[in-house]
Length: 150
Ligand code: HEM
Image 1 (cartoon, rainbow, N blue to C red):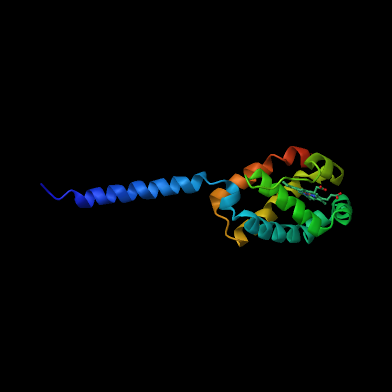
Image 2: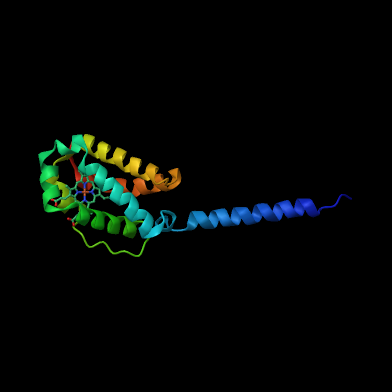
């Protein structure tokens, strides 16, 4: 009979790789995003992009909102929120999404622009496609509270 050891070794190697891959997939999204260090870096870049976005700047209510909520405050609150909803240790202490956005008159188009800028930040810091999808699905749940016109 042929020596079965090489086949056995390959089978064990595959089982071990498979086991470690599924353990990776089961880690909370928070950890797969790099924890608060990963999240704050992405949110910092994302908010900076929103602040200079021409389409969003045409909305007078959004501009006014930025004066009442300075960028560092937004970066802090959005990071804390993302940390909490992805399985991290943060407790979000800001306003509810409806309360903080109802007066901003945000349209479907503006939501799309925001999502595009978010993707640019995620791509810039090489967040993998699977984690981006998972995060977008979570963020997408806030849309009904944020978008108030077509
Ligand atoms: C088109 C999309 C969005 C725009 C233009 C926008 C813009 C703004 C502005 C201007 C404020 C400050 C409002 C004020 O002080 O009057 C604000 C607050 C906030 N936004 Fe957004 N936002 C958008 C979507 C989102 C999304 C998707 C999230 C998170 C999932 C988010 C999280 C927050 C948080 C945490 C605050 C602070 C709440 C507080 O005051 O405690 N925003 N947003």
